[in-house]
Length: 314
Image: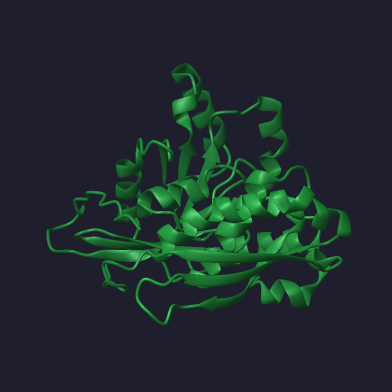
């Protein structure tokens, strides 16, 4: 895994102060929350796809600098939930806010159709009105936006909430991220370093491995299929001898038999593609060779089954 990003920061008060605290990253689906977290960490912890509502669980990313430590909490996108799975995703996002010293509200500035934004005005306000800590607004993907369109977008979002600060950024390219870190640190308390310098997350390898496999399902399948899938790690066999591979057995869970057929594909080709695509990321994560064995199982209506959702950590 690559080294973390080191974002420079000069404490706003007298030298020697150290700041630490929790920043919850919230916002609508597909705004770039996971991309931003991965950029800060300098490695892939949260999965990223072009589809909305990819993130399902709360993910902790720890960014450590010379004079600060920020514990970022990446959350599922805020949206109007219908199924139990979606309601749990929004609950996770909102519950996370209770732990935060600062909330980072991340929005996509690149495709803000005015009518679409207006339809969500009351929804966004409803979320923001529940917050009792400073909220920093980051407008993401400004590298895709014409410069003369940025100010109207800033004005529109400024009418939603008295944000403590507004920062235009590109999470993909890292533009404005040093300014964003400095703005967040203005509102974090002085405190100790909670995690060692080389610890980027509290997520276990099994969780990240399952997320990597699920990401490949999102990237390789279409329509509603990826939203009806979950990944369970059945076994994670560490090698007994140096140089031997880690052997991972995982089950991709779907809701319908037709979805199982799609995931497996003709003559097992889709399942093979999922395996082939996941292995390099798993090997980078574990820094060793990986043998990945995948199965597909039908669990009808699992997205509405509270027991199964709890097993998935939701």
